[in-house]
Length: 240
Image 1 (cartoon, helix red, strand yellow):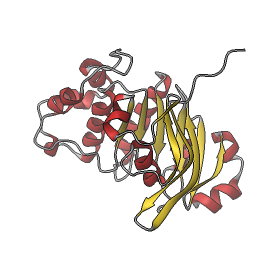
Image 2 (tube, helix red, strand yellow):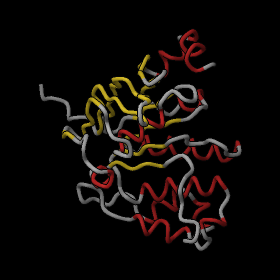
Image 3 (cartoon, helix red, strand yellow):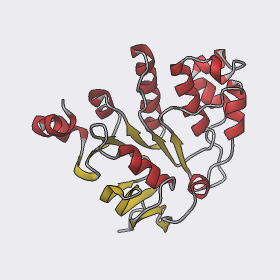
Image 4 (cartoon, helix red, strand yellow):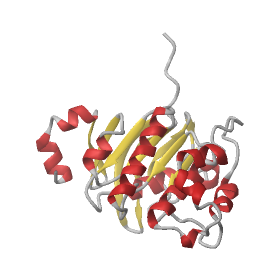
Protein backbone atom coordinates (compact mmCIF):
# COMPACT_ATOMS: atom_id res chain seq x y z
CA UNK A 1 0.00 0.00 0.00
CA UNK A 2 1.44 3.38 -1.03
CA UNK A 3 1.82 6.10 1.59
CA UNK A 4 -0.57 9.03 1.61
CA UNK A 5 0.81 12.27 0.16
CA UNK A 6 2.07 14.70 2.77
CA UNK A 7 -0.45 17.25 4.02
CA UNK A 8 -0.55 20.54 2.14
CA UNK A 9 0.08 22.28 5.44
CA UNK A 10 0.79 20.92 8.89
CA UNK A 11 1.41 22.36 12.35
CA UNK A 12 3.36 20.14 14.74
CA UNK A 13 3.44 21.23 18.35
CA UNK A 14 3.15 24.84 17.19
CA UNK A 15 3.57 27.55 19.82
CA UNK A 16 3.38 31.28 19.08
CA UNK A 17 2.29 34.53 20.65
CA UNK A 18 2.88 38.25 21.02
CA UNK A 19 5.74 39.42 23.20
CA UNK A 20 5.57 37.65 26.53
CA UNK A 21 2.01 36.44 25.90
CA UNK A 22 1.97 32.94 24.43
CA UNK A 23 -1.31 32.32 22.57
CA UNK A 24 -0.77 28.96 20.85
CA UNK A 25 0.21 25.98 22.99
CA UNK A 26 1.40 22.96 21.01
CA UNK A 27 -1.17 23.07 18.20
CA UNK A 28 -1.42 19.99 15.98
CA UNK A 29 -3.24 20.58 12.69
CA UNK A 30 -3.03 19.23 9.15
CA UNK A 31 -4.92 19.76 5.91
CA UNK A 32 -4.63 17.42 2.94
CA UNK A 33 -5.32 18.01 -0.73
CA UNK A 34 -9.02 18.54 -1.42
CA UNK A 35 -9.92 18.69 2.28
CA UNK A 36 -12.11 21.43 3.77
CA UNK A 37 -11.43 22.13 7.45
CA UNK A 38 -13.48 24.38 9.70
CA UNK A 39 -11.46 26.15 12.40
CA UNK A 40 -13.87 26.95 15.20
CA UNK A 41 -13.87 28.57 18.62
CA UNK A 42 -15.09 31.59 20.51
CA UNK A 43 -13.47 35.00 20.10
CA UNK A 44 -9.97 35.26 21.53
CA UNK A 45 -9.22 31.53 21.39
CA UNK A 46 -6.30 31.89 18.94
CA UNK A 47 -7.81 31.20 15.51
CA UNK A 48 -6.35 34.23 13.75
CA UNK A 49 -3.07 33.79 15.61
CA UNK A 50 -2.87 30.23 14.29
CA UNK A 51 -3.48 31.42 10.75
CA UNK A 52 -0.80 34.10 11.12
CA UNK A 53 1.66 31.51 12.41
CA UNK A 54 0.89 29.14 9.53
CA UNK A 55 1.49 31.98 7.07
CA UNK A 56 4.72 33.12 8.69
CA UNK A 57 3.28 36.48 9.70
CA UNK A 58 3.99 35.48 13.29
CA UNK A 59 7.16 33.56 14.18
CA UNK A 60 6.91 30.16 15.82
CA UNK A 61 8.27 30.04 19.36
CA UNK A 62 8.34 26.24 19.32
CA UNK A 63 7.18 23.40 17.10
CA UNK A 64 7.14 23.54 13.34
CA UNK A 65 5.13 24.26 10.21
CA UNK A 66 5.46 21.96 7.22
CA UNK A 67 4.19 22.63 3.70
CA UNK A 68 3.76 19.64 1.37
CA UNK A 69 6.03 17.63 3.65
CA UNK A 70 8.85 20.19 3.73
CA UNK A 71 9.96 22.07 6.82
CA UNK A 72 8.75 25.65 6.44
CA UNK A 73 8.89 27.10 9.95
CA UNK A 74 11.41 29.79 9.01
CA UNK A 75 10.23 30.42 5.48
CA UNK A 76 9.12 34.03 4.87
CA UNK A 77 5.48 34.61 4.08
CA UNK A 78 6.03 35.18 0.35
CA UNK A 79 7.76 31.80 0.05
CA UNK A 80 4.77 30.10 1.67
CA UNK A 81 2.50 31.90 -0.79
CA UNK A 82 4.67 30.69 -3.67
CA UNK A 83 4.27 27.16 -2.29
CA UNK A 84 0.52 27.45 -2.87
CA UNK A 85 -0.94 28.92 0.33
CA UNK A 86 -3.40 31.80 -0.18
CA UNK A 87 -5.37 33.73 2.42
CA UNK A 88 -8.46 35.90 2.46
CA UNK A 89 -7.76 37.91 5.61
CA UNK A 90 -10.21 39.33 8.08
CA UNK A 91 -10.82 42.85 6.77
CA UNK A 92 -10.40 41.74 3.11
CA UNK A 93 -7.57 44.12 2.22
CA UNK A 94 -8.60 44.92 -1.37
CA UNK A 95 -6.75 47.74 -3.12
CA UNK A 96 -9.16 50.65 -2.82
CA UNK A 97 -7.81 52.71 -5.72
CA UNK A 98 -7.68 49.81 -8.20
CA UNK A 99 -10.60 48.47 -10.21
CA UNK A 100 -11.99 44.98 -9.76
CA UNK A 101 -10.11 43.79 -12.85
CA UNK A 102 -6.88 45.46 -11.74
CA UNK A 103 -7.14 43.80 -8.32
CA UNK A 104 -7.54 40.42 -10.00
CA UNK A 105 -4.82 40.91 -12.60
CA UNK A 106 -2.34 42.13 -10.02
CA UNK A 107 -2.59 38.78 -8.21
CA UNK A 108 -2.57 36.52 -11.29
CA UNK A 109 0.11 33.86 -11.45
CA UNK A 110 0.39 30.12 -12.13
CA UNK A 111 0.20 27.72 -9.24
CA UNK A 112 3.29 26.05 -7.72
CA UNK A 113 3.03 23.28 -10.33
CA UNK A 114 2.81 25.81 -13.17
CA UNK A 115 -0.88 25.15 -13.79
CA UNK A 116 -3.48 27.90 -14.29
CA UNK A 117 -6.77 26.51 -13.02
CA UNK A 118 -8.18 29.90 -12.02
CA UNK A 119 -8.07 32.82 -14.41
CA UNK A 120 -10.04 36.03 -14.78
CA UNK A 121 -12.80 34.37 -16.78
CA UNK A 122 -13.34 31.56 -14.28
CA UNK A 123 -13.29 33.91 -11.28
CA UNK A 124 -15.88 36.21 -12.87
CA UNK A 125 -18.03 33.19 -13.71
CA UNK A 126 -17.89 32.20 -10.03
CA UNK A 127 -18.79 35.77 -8.99
CA UNK A 128 -21.11 37.25 -11.66
CA UNK A 129 -21.52 40.38 -9.51
CA UNK A 130 -17.82 41.16 -9.92
CA UNK A 131 -18.25 40.98 -13.68
CA UNK A 132 -20.97 43.62 -13.43
CA UNK A 133 -18.68 45.81 -11.31
CA UNK A 134 -15.47 45.06 -13.22
CA UNK A 135 -14.52 48.72 -13.82
CA UNK A 136 -15.43 49.94 -10.33
CA UNK A 137 -12.69 50.75 -7.83
CA UNK A 138 -12.32 48.71 -4.67
CA UNK A 139 -13.62 51.59 -2.53
CA UNK A 140 -16.80 51.73 -4.62
CA UNK A 141 -17.79 48.17 -3.72
CA UNK A 142 -20.06 47.02 -0.91
CA UNK A 143 -18.61 44.92 1.89
CA UNK A 144 -19.97 41.78 0.28
CA UNK A 145 -18.51 42.67 -3.10
CA UNK A 146 -15.15 43.37 -1.47
CA UNK A 147 -15.23 39.92 0.12
CA UNK A 148 -16.00 38.36 -3.27
CA UNK A 149 -13.08 40.30 -4.75
CA UNK A 150 -10.75 39.21 -1.96
CA UNK A 151 -11.64 35.56 -2.59
CA UNK A 152 -11.32 36.02 -6.34
CA UNK A 153 -7.94 37.69 -5.96
CA UNK A 154 -6.69 34.79 -3.80
CA UNK A 155 -7.93 32.29 -6.41
CA UNK A 156 -5.98 34.13 -9.12
CA UNK A 157 -2.78 32.93 -7.42
CA UNK A 158 -3.89 29.35 -8.23
CA UNK A 159 -3.34 28.08 -4.68
CA UNK A 160 -3.29 24.54 -3.38
CA UNK A 161 -4.85 25.73 -0.12
CA UNK A 162 -7.16 28.69 0.48
CA UNK A 163 -7.54 30.07 4.01
CA UNK A 164 -10.60 32.23 4.74
CA UNK A 165 -10.50 34.11 8.04
CA UNK A 166 -13.98 35.22 9.21
CA UNK A 167 -15.47 34.37 5.84
CA UNK A 168 -18.88 36.05 6.30
CA UNK A 169 -18.43 38.42 9.24
CA UNK A 170 -20.41 41.64 8.93
CA UNK A 171 -22.14 40.68 5.69
CA UNK A 172 -25.85 40.87 4.91
CA UNK A 173 -27.72 37.54 4.98
CA UNK A 174 -28.09 37.28 1.19
CA UNK A 175 -24.40 37.99 0.70
CA UNK A 176 -23.47 35.44 3.36
CA UNK A 177 -25.51 32.85 1.47
CA UNK A 178 -23.56 33.73 -1.69
CA UNK A 179 -20.21 33.32 0.06
CA UNK A 180 -21.27 29.92 1.44
CA UNK A 181 -22.32 28.91 -2.09
CA UNK A 182 -18.88 29.81 -3.36
CA UNK A 183 -17.07 27.96 -0.56
CA UNK A 184 -19.18 24.89 -1.33
CA UNK A 185 -18.31 25.21 -5.04
CA UNK A 186 -14.60 25.45 -4.22
CA UNK A 187 -14.84 22.31 -2.12
CA UNK A 188 -16.59 20.50 -4.98
CA UNK A 189 -13.84 21.71 -7.32
CA UNK A 190 -11.29 19.98 -5.07
CA UNK A 191 -9.57 23.04 -3.61
CA UNK A 192 -8.39 22.52 -0.04
CA UNK A 193 -9.65 25.14 2.42
CA UNK A 194 -9.40 26.27 6.01
CA UNK A 195 -12.50 28.27 6.90
CA UNK A 196 -12.96 30.38 10.04
CA UNK A 197 -16.48 31.61 10.74
CA UNK A 198 -18.83 32.04 13.67
CA UNK A 199 -21.92 30.71 11.83
CA UNK A 200 -21.66 27.16 13.11
CA UNK A 201 -24.46 25.51 11.12
CA UNK A 202 -23.35 27.00 7.81
CA UNK A 203 -19.70 26.20 8.45
CA UNK A 204 -20.44 22.57 9.31
CA UNK A 205 -22.35 22.23 6.03
CA UNK A 206 -19.28 23.01 3.89
CA UNK A 207 -16.37 21.25 5.63
CA UNK A 208 -15.10 17.68 5.93
CA UNK A 209 -13.63 18.14 9.39
CA UNK A 210 -14.04 20.56 12.28
CA UNK A 211 -11.31 21.63 14.70
CA UNK A 212 -12.20 23.49 17.89
CA UNK A 213 -9.58 25.80 19.38
CA UNK A 214 -9.79 26.79 23.05
CA UNK A 215 -7.15 29.03 24.62
CA UNK A 216 -4.63 28.14 21.95
CA UNK A 217 -5.14 24.38 22.03
CA UNK A 218 -7.11 22.06 19.74
CA UNK A 219 -9.59 20.44 22.13
CA UNK A 220 -11.83 18.64 19.64
CA UNK A 221 -11.43 17.29 16.11
CA UNK A 222 -13.90 15.30 14.07
CA UNK A 223 -16.52 15.23 11.37
CA UNK A 224 -19.42 17.68 11.21
CA UNK A 225 -21.80 14.81 11.88
CA UNK A 226 -19.93 13.85 15.05
CA UNK A 227 -19.98 17.44 16.29
CA UNK A 228 -23.70 17.88 15.56
CA UNK A 229 -24.38 14.75 17.59
CA UNK A 230 -22.46 16.16 20.58
CA UNK A 231 -24.52 19.14 21.80
CA UNK A 232 -22.60 19.30 25.07
CA UNK A 233 -19.33 20.00 23.24
CA UNK A 234 -21.01 22.53 20.95
CA UNK A 235 -22.49 24.38 23.90
CA UNK A 236 -19.34 24.29 26.03
CA UNK A 237 -16.90 25.45 23.37
CA UNK A 238 -19.03 27.28 20.81
CA UNK A 239 -21.94 28.59 22.83
CA UNK A 240 -24.47 26.87 20.56
